[in-house]
Image 1 (cartoon, rainbow, N blue to C red):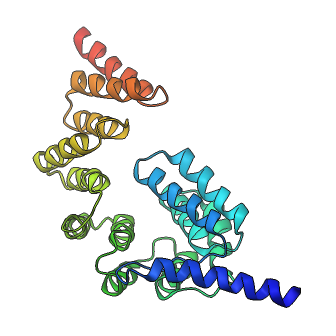
Image 2 (image 1 turned 90 degrees about the vertical axis):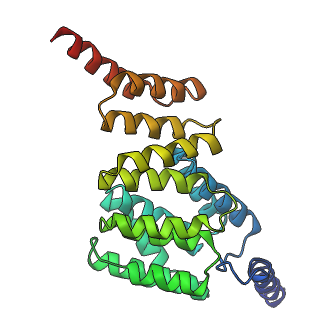
Image 3 (image 1 turned 180 degrees about the vertical axis):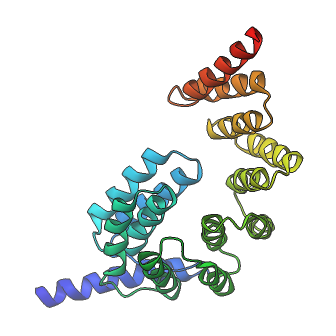
Length: 259
C-alpha cells in the first residue's frame, strides 16, 4: 500500500507538471496538489488586482494543502521583501530554499534569487529575471518577476522596458498599466503616468485599485480635489479602499483654503 501511495503521488505531480508544461512558453510550477495549485493561481490574480489580504490568505491556504509548495513560499517571501517585513521574509524564504520537491528550471532560478536575497536584501538579481525571460519569453509572469527585481533596485527605466515588452503579448494587460504608471511617476514622467493609469481604469473599471492608483497620481501633481474624488470612487466600489486617503486629500484642500 505504501509503495502504491508513493507511485500515485508521483503520478499526480507528473500530471500537474505535464499539464502546465503543455504550453512550452510557460514556466512549470510544481506541486503535489491540484487544490494547492488552484488556490495559488487565485492568489496571483488577487495580488495583481492588489487585494493583498486575499493574496496572503490564498497563498497560505495553498501551503496548507502542500506545505512544500515552492512557488507559494517564494511569492510570500518576495511579497514580504517588497514590503520590508524582514521577519516574514526570512520565514518564507527559508521554507522555499529548503524545499524538498524536485523543482523546474524556472523555479531553480527563483530559488537562487532567494538565496542571494537571504545574504543581501538589496541584492541585484535582475540577471536571474532576464534568464527567466530567456527561458520563457511568452510567460507574462517572468516579466512581472523581472519588473519586481528592477523595482527593488530602483531601475525604473528597466521596469518600463520590461513592462512594454510584456504588453506585446499579455492576455490581461490591466496590471501592467498600473505598474507602468508608478514607474513613470518614479521618473517624474507624469504625462506618461497619466496615460498608463487611465488605460488601467479603462481595462479594469470595476475594481478599486485603478482609482486608488489614479488618486496617487493626482496627489503627486498636487491636484487634491481630483485626488479626493478619485479615492472616493475606489471607496464606492469597495468600502475598504480609499477613505483614509480621500480624507487626507480633503484635509489638504481645506488647509489650503484657509491660507
